[in-house]
Length: 529
Image 1 (cartoon, rainbow, N blue to C red):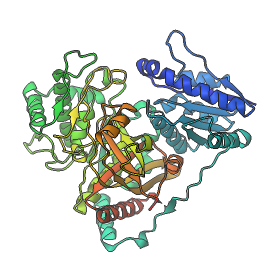
Image 2: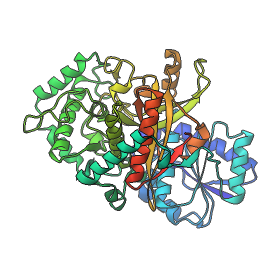
Image 3: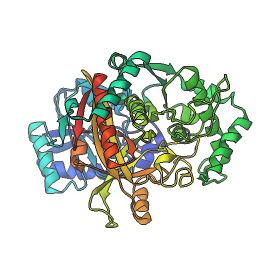
Image 4: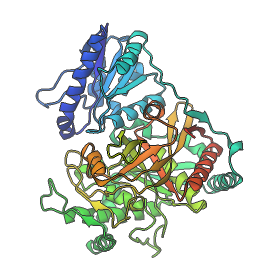
């Protein structure tokens, strides 16, 4: 039987060229595995000599490729890198054959992140698919699962860690907090400032209005051009004040002089202007949270937004005044949802309000589910995930806060205009993790508990070296959820995290947030708890 393979990639040529060797290596291993099981691999699109990669780099290109694939042919979407899901999912929606999304277990490029994004996008679209991942494609267990899909067109993973949330089983304190916050949202409503939708092809990150409005949430649709225009009204002196505030905390920058490859002070000063502009625009529209898309378009105009996003998500941050002379959201986070992931935006608002109402740290962020590995230092027997986002984690999550954090230049292959990350190591403690995701008939939330562990510097550096060392990292262990269970159930590249002051208080926050989400109309799944 002929098995057709697709390799969706980035829309940025530099990323596709840099990442191609890893993709080619993974595809060779996949071809060997499929051939050994008695089937023939047919790559549905060629290597591009002129572009020096073999990725699908656009939506039209993807649709044209589907014209030459038999309608009922089995398809494997092979993912070793970050990919733009809309390069392939439009064609997958009308394809009649079985679909398997597949990734290698590697942190080198965000391939697992790309896999989970495509899975979330297909889930939102209501398109059936199977999924598979593995460290060694010659492993008997991996090939057994691959054989099952090849022979049946389906592959299911056990999910004994999942159960429906039961509001009757929670504490009175959690129930009361959820009731009060639900009433406030029903009365006041919530506005999310969206600086353009659809970042990096993340179809799963766009919540349809008809699913959002019943929750009491509404979008203020803004343009990234408006953000850039507002940045141009911020004076150099104002930007310098923010820059000086950051440096006074003990935060350090790894500065150089070459704009193309190094972080420069000029880049950071532009980020300071973006921070001020974002606060003022969000405040002027009465937004409860904002999301900056950055990436395509804005990446060619100004430095990255990640330092800005991390500061916005922090309670302690440079003060910005509005036209009335009032400090905007003084002393509390101005919740930011990275990459305009609207599911994370809803989650971030609920998390911030629940934790603040319960007297817990309200700073929260999304992270990429980048990779995971056993701890090679021997510090813990638990499986330790690498949660890692491009810089939007708040300093309050880091060991040492601002003083323990650092700014490094964002990788040039993704961020040609540079900009500082907000790099740090998440401090040990108890966390609540969650993900809101879109299904055809409404919004759902998966929620669970975890513990952030502290690893020796050498082990942390190994994990950074295996992923993206410029970015903030969280060493997370999940309670009652193993590696494959998370991969099988999670419907997004992103996971939302927030700390509780103790295990008991984190449990309380979980109960209250789950109850609040259910009151707003979501289906809630408890995972591992």
